Amino acid sequence: MTKRTKLTLQELLRRKEQMLEAKKIKSTKELYIASIDATITIEEPDSALCRDAMGMDDSDADKYMCYECIKEPNLKSKDVQEAFGCAEPMDIVEAIFKPGEIPQIAVACLKLAGFAGGVEAVKN
Image (cartoon, rainbow, N blue to C red; front, side, top):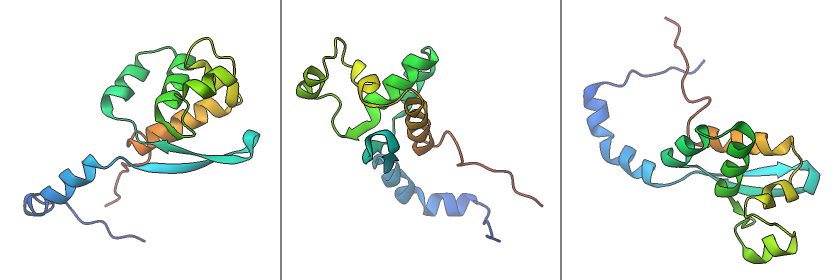
C-alpha cells in the first residue's frame, strides 16, 4: 500500500519551482494501434485545446483531439493529406484509423492532460 503525504503550505512552497517547470513540459506517450500494426506518439493537450474539443459534438471532438495531439506521424503534413485524398485536413484521422480507435486515442490524450486517473479519494 502506498503511503500518501499531505501537501502542506510549506511543502507547496518548497515544490513551487519544480511544479511550475513540470507544467511547461508537455507529456508524450506511445500508443500501439492494432489496425496499422505500429505505434504513434501523442502529446498532452493544453487546456485551451481541451475546452475547444469539449465544446464540439463527440465525433468532431475526437477527430480534432487526435489531429492536434498526434505528433508522430505528422498528420498535418500536406503530403500525407494529399496522398490519402483528404478534402479537409482533419479527414486524415478517419483515413488512417478505424472508427473505434479514434475515441480511444482522444481519451488517451485527455488522460495525459489529467482528465482521468489523476485524482482519487483517500480512505481514512
